Amino acid sequence: MSNSHVKIFDTTLRDGEQAPGCSMTLREKLRVAKALSELNVDIIEAGFPAASPGDFDAVKAIADENRGPIICGLARCNPDDIEKVHAAVKGADSHRIHVFVATSAIHREHKLKMAKEEIIRSAVGAIKMARELCDDVEFSPEDASRTELAYLAEVVTAAIEAGATTVNIPDTVGYTVPHEFHQLFRYLKKHVKNLDAATLSVHCHDDLGMAVANSLAATNAGARQVECTINGIGERAGNCSLEEVVMALKTREEFFGLTTQIDSTRLYPTSRLVAGITGMHVPRNKAIVGENAFAHEAGIHQHGMLQHASTYEIMKPDDVGISKSNLVLGKHSGRHAFRSRVQELGFDLDEFETNRAFQEFKKLADKKKDMFDGDIEAIIMNADGASTGPWILQALQFQSATDETASASVKLIHENGTTNEISATADGPVEAALMGLEKVTGIALTLRNFELRSATAGDDAQGEATVTADFEGESYRGHSASVDIVEAATRAYLEVINRILRRQERGVLKNRQTADVNQASI
Image 1 (cartoon, one colour):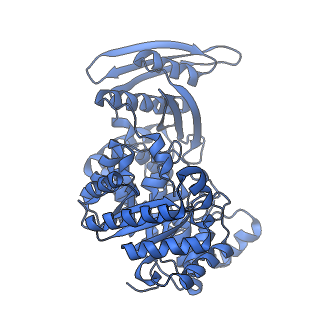
Image 2 (cartoon, helix red, strand yellow):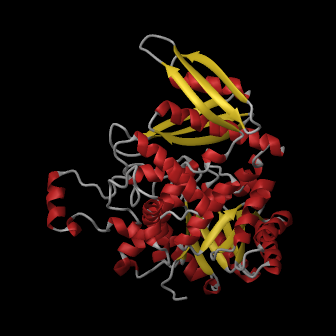
Image 3 (cartoon, rainbow, N blue to C red):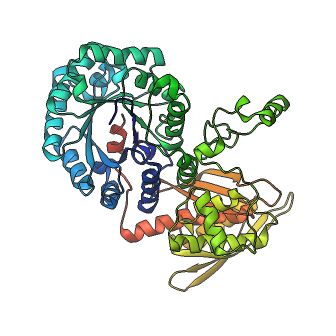
């Protein structure tokens, strides 16, 4: 592979999922992994197998699908973590073990309580053990951007001598700035004599809003792997945004002289998929994939666009997979036309998913005057929630008036055939409906966040509801869409309850070991 190729290392399923409220089910992780494969990323960091049995199972399931990209798992520098990663990823034809240890003075003193020499010994021992299990080993000195340069060079030299094939330089807390980070990479180029024996990588967080800029500065200084996430999701302010760094390299190729193998036309559908699954909606003004990214309202801009698109657009919407079509299909449209439109929007559904989505499309078409691409996207995003069970919403009635107590009646049917109907009153219809769900199912939740957004334009637009609620110390998320916003909220809340009940059936008490995950931050 040429020296102008930049590998895209996607960590949406590991670092991205560690963001509060972004945890995913196994089915959701498999859907994201499939989308990342179709996007043509080089490496998928599928998770942190030592965090919990659920994380291990998810990484193993993704690896066993063997869709093409290198499948990677994260490990601390201890034998148990490394063995778990190997056991999880070995099913993939191409797999990688990623080990890390903190190196900055503040981490050495306050977190690890280890001397410099101890940290180097720990890193070298872990890398050597990983190399015995796997030919592809990545090493990350956590908080590298705040590590003394001379010591960082010493650590990197030892890591490559021990067998690391990729060395990643993380800006773990988003502290650095582009010029400073560029100088750090130039320093390593000068002082690490064996640096050419490994691929140099970069992993930036966005605490100061410079993750993409810092990552690009690193590539300009010799990094040939960028670690990033879809929509820039991740801990705290997030990670380097995959779509932004990819399109920066593509749009300014004459400046950077670098390329990726990403199929950029898959960026928008992948962004929508991840947003729908995680409930982390993309801001309207988000670069590349936001609703306003290709919108022009100012008169002078519109005039320029009519004369020639390049006056105000440096990219075309279809470059990133955004359809220019708006009004689509109708209640008389057939299955073939629906499937074709789904594919044009960049979604790849199997036969079962297509049939279920088409049924929902026909139901919606009977309620709405106009159908838009956003309606189809909302249906697809909501495809998983409809099958989580064990409770299904059979009927919902509510009544509300100004200065009067609202009431709601919910009728649920259980998968065992029993039906239960109950009414509740509250200050508003949404609260009343949610209280009714809790009474029927016996699951009392603490609602932490309730978001409502319009899927499309128009008075009859679908409302997409996302709820986050706590149960026994853990956070759960539900998502649904409907032209009736009370129904959307009710179905989203019921999805949360169903997920809890399913986990209780499996005897799963904890989704992940929080203490371990908190230490898995690079």
